[in-house]
Image (tube, rainbow, N blue to C red; front, side, top):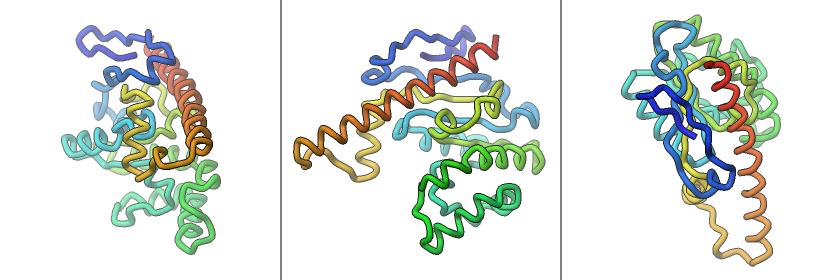
Length: 220
């Protein structure tokens, strides 16, 4: 699946197993509209965990002087408090502020199930803040959570990039990044871990393709 900028066509011919092994071009949807109005001042970036979203997000942020939000980092409960927009996010989403306090005092671990519950409200608060504060600035919201837990209507018609990195390559990057390994585990543990990752892939691939299909149909 990829969006050809020259022909303005979104190709959707990637079987699920190909997405497991083969990387494709990144998909750009409504990218040219980014920053043209307060309705489109946010660029959303999503893809498999380990696919390179953060690398691309930082590159786009540096090139366009954009305010950058990583949902994965925010979900850790340890936001960058030097970001002047975080206080406004806290005000708009008190559930998130409470979660961060609980992480800080050790009552909750980072990336807990509690953080998943507040992701839709958190993303909605970021969108509202971006539209009302400095609407002429550009913003980036990045995370795999965009297709996993975020309602599609939040992103519908908005600028979006979907990383085309395969699930296998993303997994290898993720294991290296998180310093994990399955090589030195016993066979049963390795098998169970691989099955867990495959279940993660099938779930993520299904929801990511659903988001792309919805965006494609909306664009028509």
